[in-house]
Image (cartoon, rainbow, N blue to C red):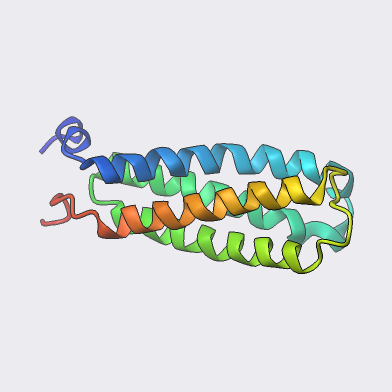
Length: 139
């Protein structure tokens, strides 16, 4: 099968998972950099923002592997698993510390709503990437 045939053979759920991964991957990096722009040079906060860079990059890489090789579904599922874990941690840490101001200055409730939405999307993307059997993994 050529790469073009593999792309058209992807089931709808895998396509949706890829679109969601691109959406989260492309938006989380600039949003987190904008949210913490004043902390980027402070090494104390390095891991507070760098994990989102890794997560977004991993999701984009999973999409690339899925479309390029036709059998990259496992990489996309791994990226979604990683993202789900990071977002879960971030969401519930923020929720338990909701009395503290957000580094961006935005209302904590707005940040929590965004993180909850990202968490719901990551769970959906994870399930769609795991449960899809695209048949192209058989060699």
